[in-house]
Length: 77
Image 1 (cartoon, rainbow, N blue to C red):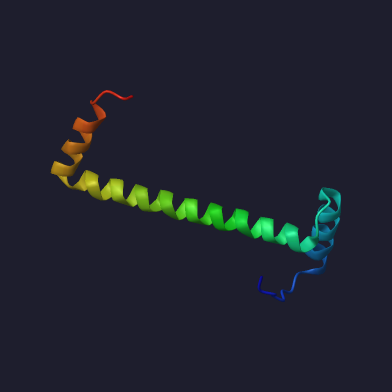
Image 2 (spheres, rainbow, N blue to C red):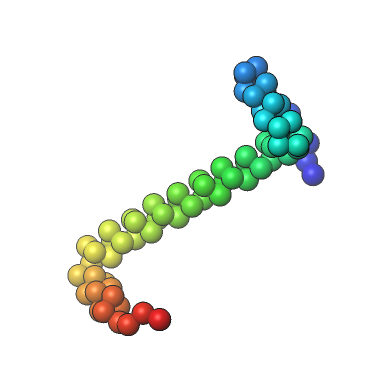
């Protein structure tokens, strides 16, 4: 692992310590878990935005839009 040094507002440091204690983990583990969660959320949000932008671009292209409509009519498994 890589050691990092971060600065937190006093209230956030205290809340993180209290929560970690309630969860039975270290504050470092709590922060690791929170960071993993936030990275996944950010990546998922970027993926959704990218997909939405692609759909808008596809809709602007009539042939792509028509191909997509044909796919929608296909039976689902």
